[in-house]
Image (cartoon, rainbow, N blue to C red):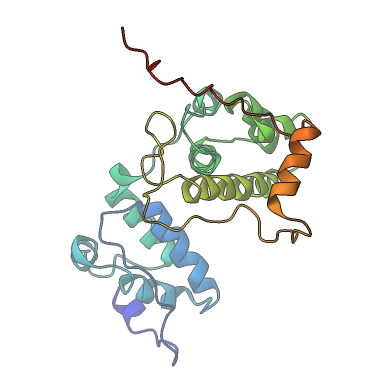
Length: 243
């Protein structure tokens, strides 16, 4: 490790990463570190030195207790790191887990696709054909599952198609939420607005009248465009319903 630690670092600082502290998945951190370092330096000693900078807490304490000179290359770092955090690794799933997954009754497409994608990443040796063809049997009946009657050829195309239906779903949910009727909309009869609120016109524009209202109403009654209201006969004097 002494030789590694004496290797010169670059003048620019290593890429800033979220430091691993034994509370998340170690594989994810190692993968992120390797990908970031690929753009920083291809030097194996530099990667060894920079790796300790990506650790904190219990993980850094473990790294500092490694025996002297045990780290001779980054492959050794990966091996030691993997052994130390083997119990924290994400457990691989079989194809049965992917085939058995189902969209819940009230689960949105967005939530389900996140769960489906996470499952596919954990299934060992899964292929694109299974990911694509299996999806339609996992979904609730709806427009997206109908679109899967013509399955895409690659997973990226499947994800793009799902993203379109997720956007549509988000819009519908937003409109439904914004369009809820206030003031007792769940009450029997639909509820009503308080009387002190101004009445909102039904239309933005009305045609101006070119005749008196009485004349228009009479013509509508004569043409039977609106039902006529029969007047109740006026009771005679003394016939007020007594006796």
